[in-house]
Image (cartoon, rainbow, N blue to C red):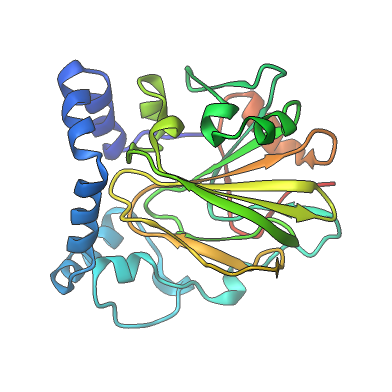
Length: 276
């Protein structure tokens, strides 16, 4: 279940007033985000680390030990391999990242509602034929918070087909904001379509958010294994979206039940989302 934080109260102020939305639109552009990224990659930003760890109750025992040269260096820290085991079940689809899962069933019109905000799959992907392919299937949203591990991987064994980037504006992917603006339509997205033996054509989308300097994906081609690292986000709460064709996936009952109740389900990278 989603719990409000100090960040949520700030976002509520920004999104639910005319003045707040105007200011937020001004600071949410790429130039502002790039400046923020430069600051957080500088050595003085390393002084923010201890306070950030304390405020967000982050346990560092699960992460590889190193001396961090900046806040972003800390934020992109690598976890110990044995702390994110990948589900080995045959035909399993796994979470590409740590976060909070919401599962939506795509209706025939391709219109989705998230916390009272409507958007279309066509506008999200800007590819009509690809959007239509997923009608009747699942849209799986995994929302990362600032205290989550911000590396992500592949949800299945894949043969990489195509990828493209949609430049947008950096609006937050926090549920508070869903009530006031078309979140995904305004965010930068990196979209990759892959072939899988178990789920046919699988699409994974990384969504940038406020204060994320950039989405950092690899430039590899060919094949990738389930759980293999695909990339990472720099600082900010971000989101990974999976699009799954109708009839090829059975979602875990506990995740589905939570989504039907309007709740998010906490999950870790590599844990099972469902089976073919």
